[in-house]
Length: 205
Image (cartoon, rainbow, N blue to C red; front, side, top):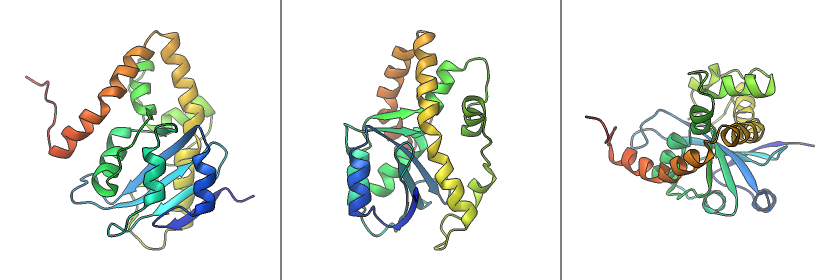
């Protein structure tokens, strides 16, 4: 059974119906750069555990109502790695107010204080034993025809998020840091708004 689907601009009705029933969805974004006011949001990957994984190629000039609806559905938890950046682009480029977020990078920083390596590649290796090739992340995601390597990478960027989330949540609770994580994720929308307006560390001296 096919697990990954590449679609243009928005999710099909059939795939939307299946994803809308999931309690949680993995989400990732591929952009042309790191400045949301300059660089285009090219691809949004979204899927439930075990599939299907939907890779949505976006056109900035067209809306994506079904994708936006999933992201704004507060009853579905969206699992990101580095939600701060992805949600900034989703806010600026898709005008989406993403609800119910879990960020594996933020959770890792609070739970895995035995290391300073909090990238997705390191989390995948530690918690699943698999190797994630991140070299393709710096390729041209604005190309109308994505390569097989890009498509494989895009799918793998979300399929591990579910296992990683469960492990990090377990660690946060074990180390009595889940409440700190919860308060940090509550602050995330404010941090994203500050990023959108160009503020850096407002707590700096």
